[in-house]
Image 1 (tube, rainbow, N blue to C red):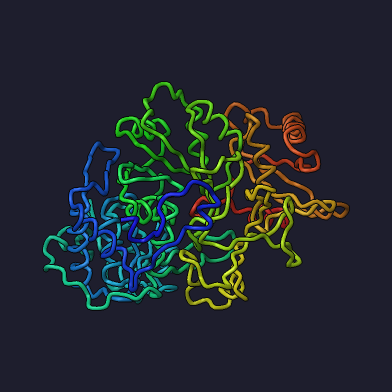
Image 2: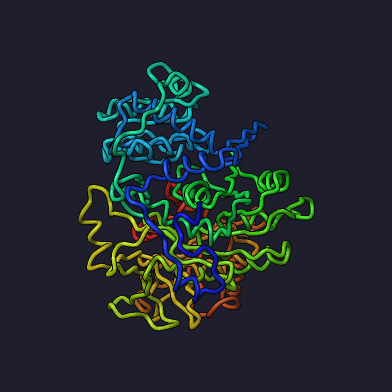
Length: 552
């Protein structure tokens, strides 16, 4: 399958990759027909999905199964009036019905809006009205049902609410009855063009309402590099990405690139994360490739890994937040596996990564993806020199690269603010070393300017996280008449240190940061808290900390 879309499939070096990687883009590409159905035709018994839940249920789906079930789902959705350009929100946790539904929506030319089950009534109302959502397909549990029911009256465009179970409340459609009763699916005559919108993500920023990021039908092809060259997958791989289907990371690691390569996607459907459970899954099902945020690996290295047979695990990738070098080094010591970091946004596919032929530098995001013309620009518009901080930008003089978003839906001003004059401004700050490796500093708005120094929150947070007292932390800048700003650390303490919170511990932590990183970066203000303010997707809202400080 990969050979259908890539002129050269293997590479020996970054130079070879940058020079010779090219994606072939078919006319009117549709992932449902051109990948899923093609696998079902050429290798129908090939395993596509291995689904396990925390109740012991286990179901395997071949590509023939996925084609059959997505066709039935598409027919059912069509019978409800869903067609080209219609907005459908999926609130499906890690249930296998997500794969049936997103493929069905692609086949109809409709627009899929993956969403988290953590949405409240207010969140659902905002999304329904902002995007004119026509249908919601959701898990039938009490909390999700209640929030959706409360939102209906204030969501005038919402015509259908569908439950996959276990409960199907009064006034809701029954997903499984609907697909079983559906007529044979008839492919629409013209389901889509390449430039039509296929995906919409509400991405929560640290300020204001979430932005509506839209991608076109070629977006899955942008994830070829994600699956084939970052996750390093083959048709024999069993790949496990730890992500709920409501987040963009799900299609990064549980769908597009993986199925283009022909790997089997492993899904563990659980309610509460426990490192022990995940390690047991890796051991029992012989996972070969695993991807998760650094937090997960921080939990892993606290476990006795000798209790688990993870010898099948050959490759691990890491994304979602910057990687602390200490975590890399400890996991490598315990397993012999190098954590291969990657970076991207909801607005993009993978933009910077550590590939199999690249030697990782712990703490670095890696080297740029050949799909993207990436650079660093200083605040005055200059190209940053090696070692100098600058905002990560993507140049599009030669056209929009595969995987870059179309814009922010219904918000041309916000789109123009981020993407103008053939430059997309990511809002993230990094620096590049002499070997072309990129090192994350922080969001542009979060960088602290103190006594002429530019200090990135991540570098101070990384230093703090090496102290045993620190479970979680956030670095912000506080206005200062002399220095402009000073560094403030807001810290969640470990259980062992909670009763030690006081001036002595503050001094100990400050001295620790001075030893671990440059002394001028140490936090002059330290505050202990029980929890940090976060967005619905788990990002730390540093802006809330700054606002709280301003109001004092």
